[in-house]
Length: 549
Image (cartoon, rainbow, N blue to C red; front, side, top):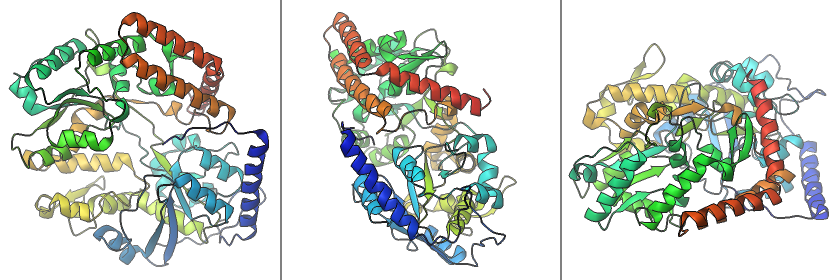
């Protein structure tokens, strides 16, 4: 969730930095961490190894997001109670109360940082805490405990190294295999009632949306989800190997060089196509302003014919289940990405992914026993930890594991309701997700079940979304901190883009679109877009060197 950056005077910025530095210095003076840092900055862990289940561990955890709320009270559900009873670990969650930035600033100023902060990788908060020496380096722990280093891999770990050469971040949902949930989903009931016409190209889509409009006046033919986010996946369907992230970066790569998105022929073709759909009312008319709850309401009542979104695998399952309560013929299905005629559909990318995963956990200097916390995270990241966190404690839904340590479902798996699994908080306490193990295990479990019992989310991932991926780890972490010069430029470029894109959607002609594109380009370059692209270019090239590319 990005917040609008504001111009701050040099004097005001200096005051803020001084206050943070003072608070951090005070915190250092009161540090009671069991693991001390030597002059070189490395952590001296000693020879003793923390053993889960023998020694008790209680730590505080802060989710640094406005939207974050804890799954519940630790120890009150089946999953966390098993960990409490068997591993003697208690997690006390600190909430943001919907104001994450203010909460973190208060904790910094009062020298009361939590033991663990769950936040964006390479984000502004991570960097300011690292620069103020408020984070524990993890390198020695990685060598001492077996799982994280083995599972993440040396190459990916090197991508996490800070400018000082050390690692401070424990990644969440990292992977060495394709992953992603973005793409296209159709209302299968409507599709079948209209005769199941060919639906592969953008020409097919246009004709299909007209059919929907003519026959179902109360249904939205095409929806791009909240904030019109689906437009980036339409963009990737107009060229082979095109990354949807180019739109989010406001720059595409051509001839190994970042260039303005406004000059991208593929982007221009995309927005003109979407504009046509808007003008002919074949797409939601409030696509820029509708909220997630509005989308869910329409999906849960079968009033969207085609959806393009960051996540179509979960709605294809949950929305269908909700809809089936009133209509037994309710059915959603994730389909192969729509693409421009003549393209190789297997080269359409809807799911660029990074081996680094989503976000990360940081252990702070306030932790009394950072090694114990790391040991717990290392256990969680391993196969046993992932099995407990995602598939329940042993003896409930599974008793044994296969040769790859994936749980083998017992008779309770199919007999247990989705609500019971939800109440057990499966997945909810997992803040160090191992995508390769979890997704692979999910797939194997689903294939053991009869079709009517299979989770459609897992089926959609296996059949479509995981097959429309590309490893883009080299592009991870190349964007600037929001409070840097380039970060302020990025905010201004983003504001110009959002305004321009909104006008393009409702433009009355292609000539007007061309003028808007040129205006967006000129305004962006005036506020420093080229400087921002040079920044992206430099970081991208450095990442490629780290990866040996």
